[in-house]
Length: 128
Image 1 (tube, rainbow, N blue to C red):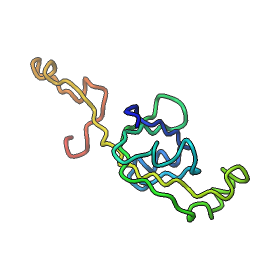
Image 2 (cartoon, rainbow, N blue to C red):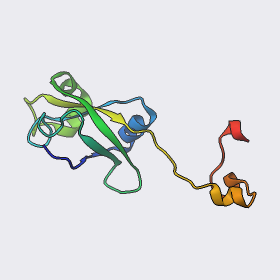
Image 3 (cartoon, helix red, strand yellow):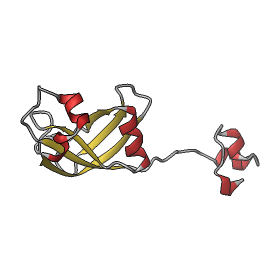
Image 4 (cartoon, rainbow, N blue to C red):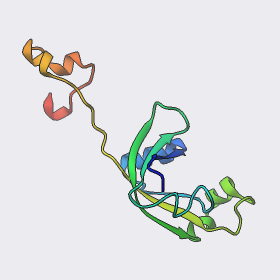
């Protein structure tokens, strides 16, 4: 078993759904890259919006199983068509880590500055 995080590039809409919490399972063709030995519960993952480094999130595999259900859809046919016909889907349940923004306010507080103005971030509505 590898301790290196599993890299999972995703189409933008699927990455956004994971981040929004409306998607928790990724489906891939079962095989050497996507199986229970590679995608074991507890393994860390990095999901990415495409292959760029700008939009990435970390998480953990919660559960792995196989299913024929996802292979019946139109999207599966478009993506995997003939190459993976007759193989089940590898179903990888992922818990995405919450996004934390680390900022240091001690300098701003020492000088009496409003950290929301100096950090370049807009404060949440309840803090305005």
